[in-house]
Image (cartoon, rainbow, N blue to C red; front, side, top):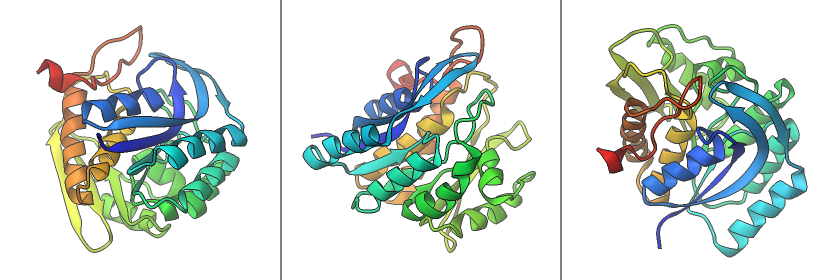
Length: 263
């Protein structure tokens, strides 16, 4: 049986991010993906035209249906939309024995808000404390901690601020830092530091990168890999997916989750 990974996130009707990107990533990495849908978005390559969160009871029922029957070996969270859903999911995850990867999704690739401002405190105090690995990008770091990252040296300060909220590891994604040569991320638990560097590809079609990276980390953890190794493998996978990202519609296209099969 393949490793079992559960994603708790929103649906992207355009297929580039969210639940759709998560499940594609898990399949590409040899895991069986399962889902708890928290919200439905009307979304395409140009942006998010609408978003509707699901009732708390629907989220609970999906989660219990999967966990109580099939079980999970890793969980990944994405778009949770509201404080009510953040707190519901955090409560559910508090009792799970599997590692949890928290992608604190706040804004879409196109700049559309995917998390209510009123939910930020719930993310800080309820969700991050149950995370094995938290994977914020620089905008999400600023939202959650107030730390503004402008240079590579600022990543340490950002990681320290995120770790104060309780995740075991922080993976600070530096892909939005200026510079053409490399995309650098920092993974740390406050003691160990691992700097992850990869070539920066000149490709605007990068929709779904955050979802893909977090799901790839979860897939690695479900296979039993240590955190550092799971993150390194996930970084390599998403780098290849970004390089192969393709045009779709009139806006920003998705990364290619199947790039290894076409290499």
